[in-house]
Amino acid sequence: MKLAFVLGTRPEIIKMAPLIQEAYKRGISPTVINTGQHRELLYPLWDFFGIKAHYNLDIMREGQDLSNTFARAISSISQVLEHHNPDWTFVQGDTTTTFAGATAAYYNKIKVAHIEAGMRTHDLFSPYPEEGNRQMVSRIADSHFCATPSNRDALISEGIAQDKIYVVGNTGLDSMAYVKPSDVEAKKWKTILLTLHRRESFGKGIQNILTAINYLADYGGIKIIFPMHPNPNVREAVSKFLKPSEAINICRPLEYPDFVNKMREADVILSDSGGVQEEAPFLGKPVVVLREKTERTETIGKSSFLAGFDAATIINKTVSLLTEGKIFQPDFVYGDGKSSQRILDIINK
Ligand code: UD1
Ligand code: UDP
Image (tube, rainbow, N blue to C red; front, side, top):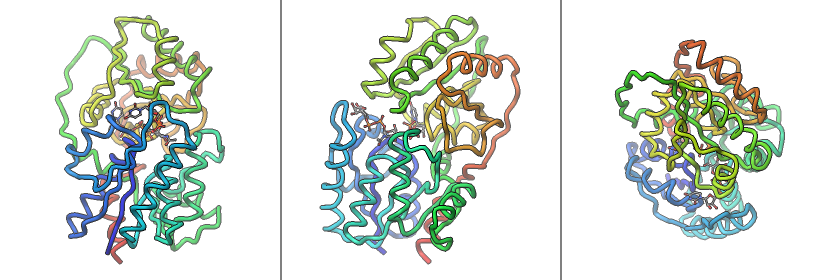
């Protein structure tokens, strides 16, 4: 069986690497197509997971826009797929690479396997453009691999045939097994881990979030670690609105195992990331979600808390989590670490 994997951003490689490794274990040598939508965020991950790309399409441009990124991706993916003509093309999630990869496969009449299918907010502008991308991929995919039963139900309600939908958990949590846990040291302060990158928060949203961070930095007894995403919109907002403070450590994006270990050490995680909303519950860590809507609803009100872009809500929720000191148990609702095996069992049938 000939398989192709299309990926290009940090979360896609983290969530597809265990699947590619599982294919190798079963004697399948898939073609790995890296669009290069991300650059330095991807570099360390190839060695870490022990996988290689057969193609690097090098599409990233500084401050790239959606249309041109999509155009560069689809034309170059299409050429590779035409040449290899695989039985299945795997895409993951809802990025520009995902949508271009699925569309290129469809145009070449190659079957599409969609990993992390069925996530929905039902608002095309939150997350933007991810909600549109994933809805469009669902229209043209042949197999839909969902993380949770509610993702499956969303697809069924859109008229997708039940026998093409599989609930397998999220492959991102398979990758946790690659991380060696570091020792967690006792400390005199509380630690917040912060990440930000979503397009729909650029403008007033990110300004409000950073106002809340300034307040938390001045609160006393709190240290904030902020591995900053290289998106120029994030950098610009941070330089404008985040006050310099000894309590805030702004650093480069962390390598994946270091980031996972920072999550383990953190008292509270503040993030607009999709992957982090799955990983934090898996690790038993509370996460304040810096978004107005989320498709990861299974843990809302349990270990994740939707704060929106309101500074007071972000501050109050974070302070109460830090002061209550409640212990959160690991929750495997988004995946148990065996999703890749299930997917390849199904594809191999
Ligand atoms: C993209 C995805 C988003 C995903 C996120 C994961 C789309 C539309 N968005 O958002 O769904 O959650 O990745 O991180 O597909 N840049 C670099 N180096 C890198 C990566 C990015 O410099 O390694 C900078 C570039 O200037 C680039 C910009 O960030 O133009 C934006 O990258 P882009 O992939 O368009 O958007 P993300 O915000 O990363
Ligand atoms: N991550 C990382 N280093 C960081 C921040 C995040 O390796 O400094 C990992 C994180 O563990 C998760 C993934 O990147 O697996 C999430 O990527 P991102 O937030 O960029 O995208 P999203 O999941 O929102 O699409």
